[in-house]
Image (cartoon, rainbow, N blue to C red; front, side, top):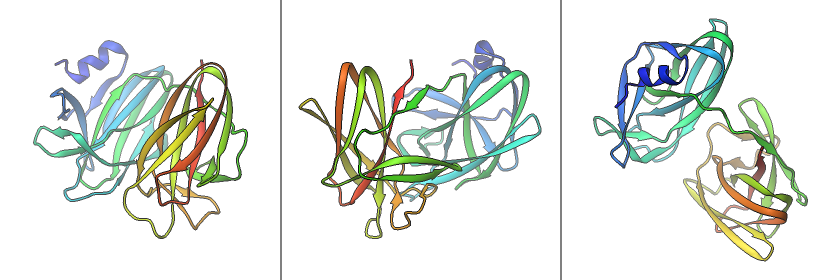
Length: 276
């Protein structure tokens, strides 16, 4: 196995990572992957030559007996000046364990847009269920997605996500959201189930998409988000975001979205198309 430090140097100018303590993660295929250990007492420092994008993969060691989601936070400092708080929410992985047999969370990522020249970064552990956050770096550019607007809908919901306000379309039972889009296109649909005071734990739901007489089903499962809220809609709480993709052939598509298979009264949807 190529050492993580050597592999990163081969593909770009990421260098001088300190400290370089690592842990191997075993995937269900018996493939292992190395992560750096970010602890409360030992921040991880590294330098990157830009301009480029750096994708940061993270996991946590899963606390025993926890059946829900967990939040953990990191502080990213750039060139000893700017600091930002990275808040991530994950759940238990059913396929990954560390080299001691402990269960690991599903990976969560964020991107660093590195400006031109030599740049120095520092990741600090702020909070997590345990002392350690696992970190891995890759040179990957984020996909470019453009938001597209529904053609017919009844109401919108504004969600507060990482200090941004994002608009979702509210999809109630026995109602439809219609989206008219020209193909070929790759459509990404982001959904959140709307929890009311009766609902607890994981919840299943299905989004039906009808396109020219053919209906496709997308079965999803969500849990109540601990970090996302709706603006001016205190009676409902969003679930974690779940997404699915549709590859649309050439021509005009009139997509009709409906909600089924859930006790929830409504869900919230956003639509994005991959930029060419």
